Length: 137
Image (cartoon, rainbow, N blue to C red; front, side, top):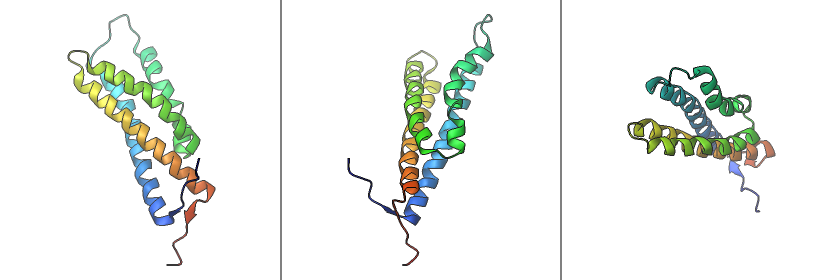
């Protein structure tokens, strides 16, 4: 595999900022939409909200330290986990009456996948020094 072509520092910083914000927005948006889905469509009385919420949130919350510490490897692994939420969103989308929340969940999950993937790539480039300092120009 060919190494990544170095980017100018200004361009890399812009890409890092954009992908970071998209990652954060879609990450916390996905957590919120999972909670909203449980509130909008109530569970049966014998169900325990805490247990179901833990099952839905724990895979995402496991990556919170990696996101906060800006770890590129953690962002790469988050991509794989986000695909599970994409599949769940598509499955929810085909359930009558839940198309809106399913589509939003799928959209947030695919945005999280893309943004986290690009952030991991660009942050890795920055850490490896694959950047062109444009301060001389």
